[in-house]
Image (spheres, one colour):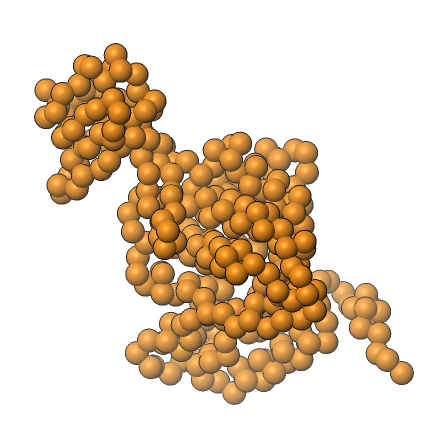
Length: 314
């Protein structure tokens, strides 16, 4: 006789923390280990299963898989930065946040799909107790990558459920709250999957926590990227104040800000008649729209585009 798990779940009161027998077994083992005390050592883990027209058998285009995974790593870094208060595109991400959100990958093929197994690059012990001190397992022992993964998968699931009233959706309010870096990386991840005809099935399991899962099709991914672009969620308006060092109608302006840093500003939206009023050495306030551009090695760089300016002093 085969045990009916679905019928068993229907008889439970409230929402269970598990979806199948594997989840129940995992949670039981993790709880037993935790009751024995000591520092958390069980690793979180997840998977990205790619299906769709871009997958033949259990293989997919190398450049497509690489681009999708690079953008997924960028998304996890972005949600990790947002959860620690770093929502702006300006400046370099703190190295400790980069380290704590870095993922490692093992690939395992199954017919009709490509399953990529994901684990944190940093162990729980190294992050939670970097000095090696003994602590008891508690609910606060969550790695930053767990928080980042939960935020990213929740965003994708909200995007999957988008209806016609997108402007009042949880998805839009979450993306706006998380900031333009998350919007940019979420757009790029969705676009890379659509570009190579991949459809993702994402899971993440943290010890003693319910498993997270979301699966999206091509039209849902396209809708997410189009909404971000149409609402200009990837743009961050700000003001750059400093001394104008170069000014041109055809090349980027260079403005020296506090500390001697030079900011290059694309001024193509500024008309030549306005540019003619400027000269080097002036102190200016330039209203700019900041976006993130990705270099050939996957590195992010802030791009400044001027929308207007004000002369503060000669």
